[in-house]
Length: 239
Image 1 (tube, one colour):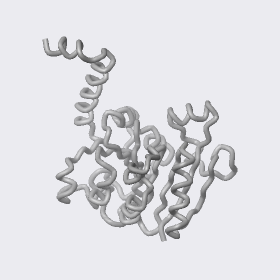
Image 2 (image 1 turned 180 degrees about the horizontal axis):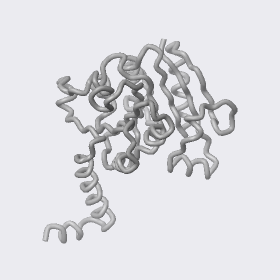
Image 3 (image 1 turned 180 degrees about the vertical axis):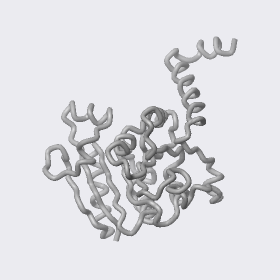
């Protein structure tokens, strides 16, 4: 009776979408490659994996690389396939999205990739200082409106968090279709005096772009390229 009532007030596709989300949330809870701590657990520093991601989650001592705002998890999964001796952890608050990547990783028995459902602004509570080897930021929302600047993943506050958890020589990779995000980040990095190792506004029209940047394309990236949209990339390190 209740489902019949809901279907009267919601379009059918929204009802089905909600059911799919709930199903994916439930499946995520059974996936051994997914971690979903509560906000309270993170802020109280009671997350046992903090400082122990290699040992207790990946069961090895290989480098640890994060993908922030991992979406469907395509990039993290493909990086894991390409670099089997590196651990990759996709992070996103939307678990129903990365469900696809987590499921694919389990089906293909990929032991070096996992997923973490949390807000990115909490990462300095989730990882110890110098615990992370590299960070990937792939196609983030540029948050163009001024009021949204605090949510921009390369603003000065976020950069401070990345610097805290990264190893001394750890790199950050930004791959985006947003010229605004590319320019904003470059300007900020120059102003802060950080080390920009590589930057290009059109990686597929340049020479010498890293293979990990050009050999992996997400579903949406392919769509951008089909309509002639340029993909930008920056690799930088902190002083």
